[in-house]
Length: 80
Image (cartoon, rainbow, N blue to C red; front, side, top):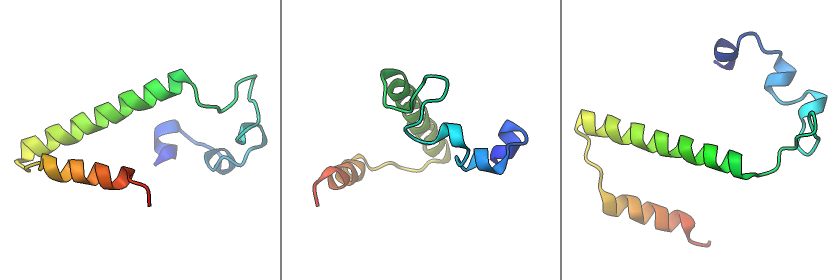
């Protein structure tokens, strides 16, 4: 599927096995650390995904139980 979206991508690049892009190795001076831009972008993508799932459920008439979702979030955030 990635090849269909990006065009022909060599397998080592697709799997992250090429030498210059490994984790911790700078590529053109940029590293793969956490930063504000990537955090904001991932937050926007998460919000868009939640919105699309919610509207899809609403369109199909699937009820969302808010108490169940809150219980899932609490149980996933609790320490083992």
